[in-house]
Image (cartoon, rainbow, N blue to C red; front, side, top):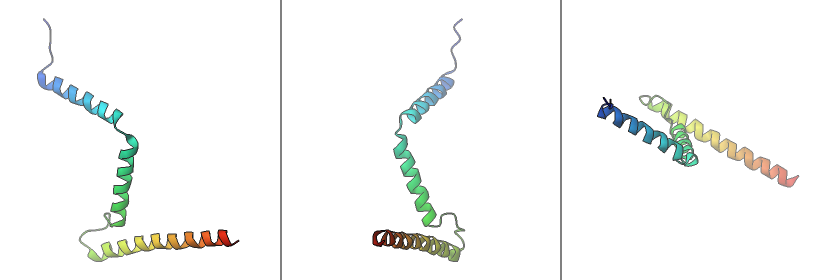
Length: 85
């Protein structure tokens, strides 16, 4: 009268356990860094813009790169001001 669960249920349970163990043992820093890099790349390549509107994609890319360039210029000016003064 030993009730055994069906084989596919046991396999599902084993896969769930293995997946849980994998999530707990994976290096979280590496996965986070990779996700951050992918999100940044998608942001600067205008992945969120309408792909059918080429002008919007190009304008979004130019605007985001100009923002980064402006930030670099302001940081250089700040460093120059702090060093000089």
